[in-house]
Image 1 (cartoon, rainbow, N blue to C red):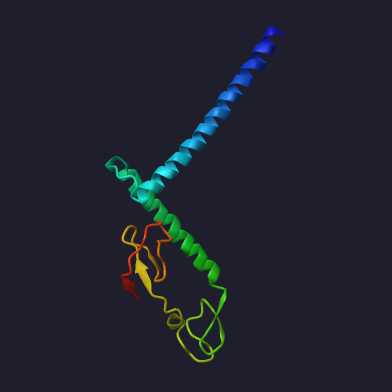
Image 2: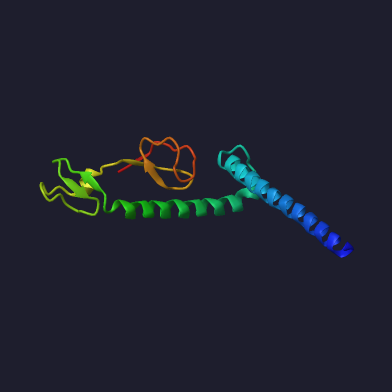
Length: 140
């Protein structure tokens, strides 16, 4: 009977330890995310973080560019309006009514983020990839 009681008590203590370790891991993740955000916003400047921060930035770029690619794949079958009023698929190269190139319809100007080099819409204040403030160098 004593062995069962000891086993139950051991299991209870192990579960308490496991719960505490899980909570600690979540808090460390939150702390890491907060620290990384403060590094990106230049509130924390410490060369010891540079290598890790740069690796995270590269992963952010991969995540962002692949998310954009997925979004583009989804948009391939959506429609847009040509200047003549015709509905066109995003995959169409030319309008079937007026012959206008679809590239000419999407004449969005972009600016390039100095931190991660991603292109964002001209009216963007912050980079959608890395979150840094962007400048107004215009690219067409």
